[in-house]
Amino acid sequence: MASAILQNFLNDLHLKYKSMHEGVLANYIPELAKANPDWFGICIVTVDGQVYEIGDCEQLFTLQSISKAFIYGMALEDHGRDYVLKRVGVEPTGDAFNSIIKLDEYSKRPYNPMVNAGAIATTSLIKGVGPTERLNRMLDMFGRYVGHNLFIDMSVFMSERTTGHRNRAMAHLMLNFGMIDAKIDEALDLYFQQCSLMVNCRDLAVMAATLANNGMNPITQERAVDSRYIRDILTVMYTCGMYDFAGEWAYKVGLPAKSGVSGGLIVVVPQQMGIAIFSPPLDSHGSSVRGIKVSEELSEQFGLHLFDLQTDRSRLLDTLCNKLAT
Ligand code: GLN
Image 1 (cartoon, helix red, strand yellow):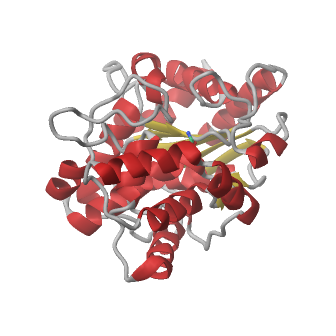
Image 2 (tube, rainbow, N blue to C red):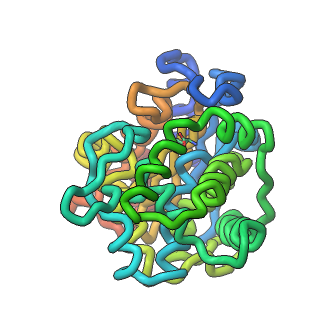
């Protein structure tokens, strides 16, 4: 009963926003401009493994910046909290995701791991003997989150690699400040590879649900990340995951989230569910327009905002379905 109500609600949301045609495709990475602006999927995966989906949930697209949250978890596992914090801060920038590096004047660190500069620094921390081992470790990590092997879209990778001059400039500046080591081409390649991983909307929802489930994939029951780092990942997603829209997002939606320029958006409802939306047209901050609308409605309707203290979180799904049924 509850599941049918939730599914119907998602179907209605999908129908409502399908006809909304705001936003523009990312074009600074030439391959991304080839996306179909009508692609639109919504998927929810609960921590007990139920899947609700509507629309284009099997369409493949590249992970882009959503990868940053997961790579941050991997860097924390590789080095521990104290070391990573010395290299990358946890302070929102209030700037665009690709703003040319703004370093904390005192510590010389990039502000946070969700903007490009911080993400490149985080990626440079991934351990491994040589680029192949680092790539394989990264693929294994993402594989645990989604529950199957992931592959790189080579044309997007090459497109980013040949046009990513801004990212390259940031890496050089951080090298100049001694914040990353000399192998910047390897770090940039790994960064472009993580951004070019192919996923679908359902994969994203499983990844978000894994974070919601304290690091354990709710479908495969495999641990994807050490549970002690979940709070670090969710905190930076909450404060920095939506870039220079993060404050308004926290105010309106009130949940940890991460967007990417190919149109994916993940939202984590801790201990309850992962939500993913895929729709390529973006707003001026580089986040999916439909993704934001759908998230705002879900949060509002179901009282998902973390500080909505009237919500009974122990029975969230039942409560929200009862609410919808009345
Ligand atoms: N690969 C993109 C870049 O480096 C990722 C940006 C994003 O998704 N916001 O610019």
